Image (cartoon, rainbow, N blue to C red):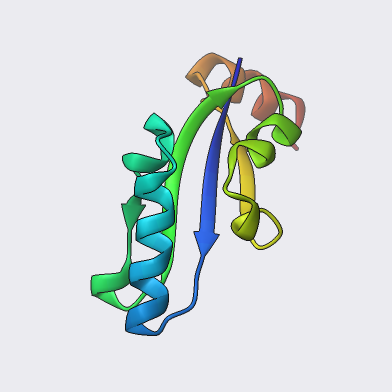
Length: 92
């Protein structure tokens, strides 16, 4: 499984925020009922981290109205030995 960060923008109006939150909460999906929101700080987006098989599978899990506008980023972690080896290749 891969880990993905999903960023979902929505209409910044008060009603737009409420409707987006409502859709996510009523989706019944554990992923979306635990989304983090930036609305109270003026950033009208939701963020969710999921572990799924692919970017396409991740997009399909979104409520249909939000699939097109969502940004999906595959996340990874690095270990110091990986970076050391990489940087060693590029020493002048």
